[in-house]
Image 1 (cartoon, rainbow, N blue to C red):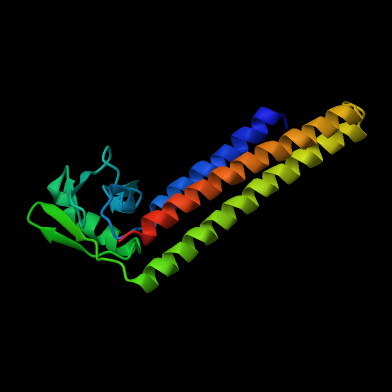
Image 2 (image 1 turned 90 degrees about the vertical axis):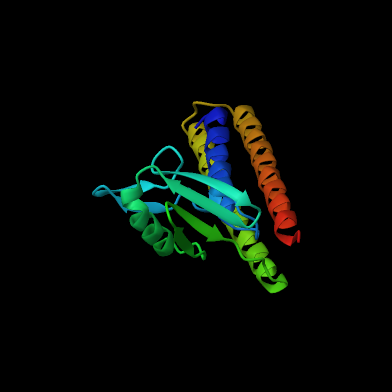
Length: 184
């Protein structure tokens, strides 16, 4: 495993965590809260993204408005949102679906901060796993005599530097999300 591959693997973990953290709602309407919900329509499953089934917008800081491209699947979209366990209640209003985002209590904000920290810790564990695999790969190369001890030492040091930078990036994401959650 070369160093570019290590960095790419760690960045993939960061991207997954970013997407995962976007689903943690901060009491503010955002299309990202619902766009990855799976909808059963047309005999298959699809995400509710703008390009697939509907246009998703916010009409005010507390309301998400979903406008299906095909009105015949409005019921399936509502059902998918209810089954998606996003903690929000979609209401059909004519040709659109409205979702009102309730304000968060202080207790709920603290719970969400805890959830964000759990997601971050999971990401850090995955990053450390990538580091562990990469170091083991370099040690194997050293034992097979394909790299020198100096090259192995340098690689370990570089892998640790990449790991530290990536974990710092995750911590920064977590801090921003925590500030967003605690904002009233």
